[in-house]
Image 1 (cartoon, rainbow, N blue to C red):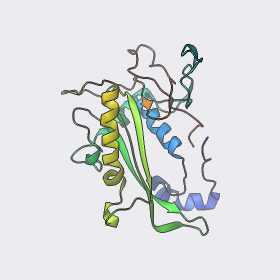
Image 2 (cartoon, rainbow, N blue to C red):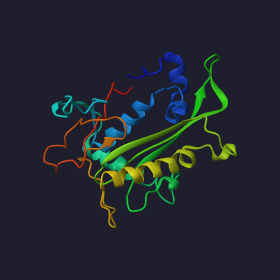
Image 3 (cartoon, one colour):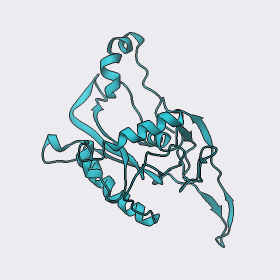
Length: 231
């Protein structure tokens, strides 16, 4: 499941929408919803049903049934998803905000997150309390998996270090490098524009969820990328 979209008074939303909502204020999402949003980009604009079970086996290890992919809806066109994936490459580069998330030999599309925590007792946000994150997928051209790292009130030496790219980025890089080895992904020297028709598997979410777009080559990996519809 997930949290519903924040219900704000219409007058407040109209008054602050232009300056607040694009920064993430006034909205709330779960880590799973954040993961699904990135999966939608990696999967060429399709969002599927999230699952934690890949298959059912008996006591002898014989597979009795496997869950099949379920596509819930399309949230982006293939072209838009490919353009966003390409733009998100710049985040994980020497010029981006998450250069610490670089995994040598692979292109990565990703996004940092630094969110103020909501004050549960009073309107507004808690001072000096943040949730930092980084989500991304690799390889950008043919996504094999999607990974999200979230830290709640991370302890850093200075406040200037408490940002998603600096805190969650290095953790992402270490996990992603191990996942790439586990999946036998070959490092590449040359990279082309991301293929929006490929399907990605979110690490830790589980089984197969969506097939490649019609006319595309079979996906490298398939996994669960769904849940409730994103707000």
